[in-house]
Length: 323
Image (cartoon, rainbow, N blue to C red; front, side):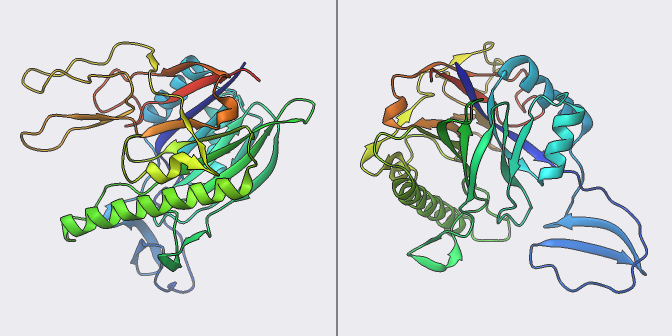
């Protein structure tokens, strides 16, 4: 059995504020990161007015503990990682070098969060689709982050399956923008991303191929905006997390906040301000090609112990593949 998991690590940043002498003030940063200067000394860095800083140590310990004690994944797809060096450092200092093979390609996110792969198994071909475009907007990269394609190999270097890891457009709309229009554009970009994923997998995979599509989709499996993603080369993908087990019961809601989740199939909890009840949704998904339909078992989600999450606002999910 090979365990394949997905986990949004929630801003695994390594950026620290620092002070250093520089010879010249650099130009404007098109990526959205703002540098604040005092004379020639760099003091702080911000994104959209917020201080950019490293992930809290206690939260980092918490996500590491969940990976080591609960997930036990042979191959782990991760999201919201700043760069490959912090992922390697995290593996070395918090996971005890659990994963000898680590992949991350810098993507498109202005906040500099990327998707990566951590694996106990050898890795073959690595392909980034970060430059892909959609016909509706041919001059704009379609992926907010990337669609990372990686071959997972056996110890004899034979190909076992292909893993696709992504992180689709979120629902977030800056408060100074038109909320209704911004939400519509976010949904449409997610649709374009889903259509592009389908087109890429249809082009890259032959009928009967073994592949896994996973990541933070920022929408539920039944969303109309994700629907195009669920068919590739006329193959209907299989939702491996339709009826997952939980490592523990969910934390009960406080009095007056509703009955809590009505299904085990959720990894993200959103508690809007005001009267609406908390929403529980399966943002973190694992989809399988038809060739793997009868080869997976033990779909599981590691349930948080706090409403806000243990080290991350997403719960990790995994399955076992019999290859």
